[in-house]
Length: 162
Image (cartoon, rainbow, N blue to C red; front, side, top):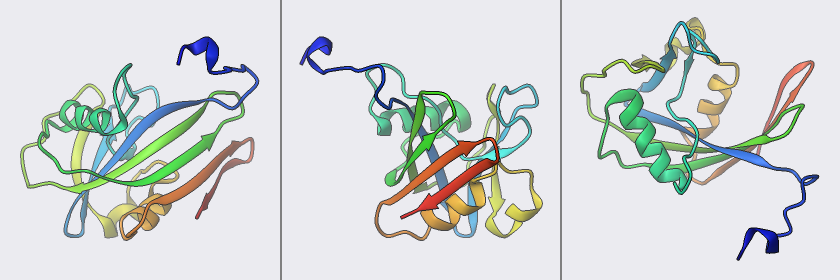
């Protein structure tokens, strides 16, 4: 179908697709500590991931991000969550959340930051992005796909999980 046939209405809700990946080893999770000069979340821990490139599907984008940010290849990923993030100004974000396991291996730094294995029990003591503890609490044990909605307001981040 051609774009002009898709009824693209600029007043409709639009989203930017992104990936977020959490790899585990027992009670540890692989997180990225943002580089000190990173625009968003400098020196804060978050999952690995990023934007989809034109023509990429979410899984391929997640695999690319793992290779770029942690030097990891050949990782089995499972789609575990979809998070819709509504911001004060459009567009929103549609986050494809993947999980998997990975063997111990050297983790080279990237321009985005340093990938590090972190004990889940230590999350409360680390500088993490705001939603990380709640998202991990819902995503990691889930057997089925998790759906979540985030609303970014002047008062802060409101999260709900189905």
